[in-house]
Length: 237
Image 1 (cartoon, helix red, strand yellow):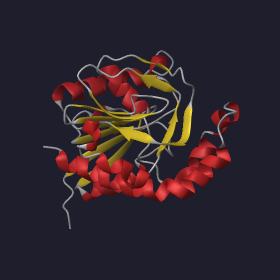
Image 2: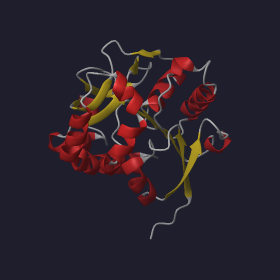
Image 3: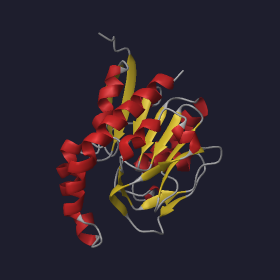
Image 4: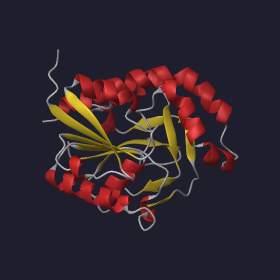
């Protein structure tokens, strides 16, 4: 049995947008997982965590005047980038890390990318620990309307047809996913209910199609995501 003596903190903005299928490889790698609910809890416990995840949420980085905790998360991400502490951002988290690294974050000009769509890995992505993400021709799950410029010094690892900057790395310890490889397909109904108002306003989104495509592709993405995260955690020095 692996002795869990390392800390993993996950900053959460919505209860159902958690670590999902990434939790299993994180625990397997010997980390104890602790969630911090960003809007109501102090982030102090995240500063020196051995591993930090900043998860998704509905607010925009540019709305930090309305949601002050976003400023705190940007400051935290900047500190961890400077210290080269292992940090992963997913969706909003990837945007927060990009902002902390000096990149602009803004509403996407191609509209909302919600549902299942292919992702293409760059040469760097295919030669690194995240290469399993596209095994078996698996599509990726997406849920965002904002995007960002690639931070200076970052390496682009993956793109979709609508948005180029989907997956990136800053050095060997910082990773950003605009997409959602952490999705647990068994929890898709939580996403559909939790984002019901957004779906109602986006007439081009096929809710029934999302549900059906999750049945078709969810388990493959789960296997690929677990393998990719296992590889990345194993690559940390």
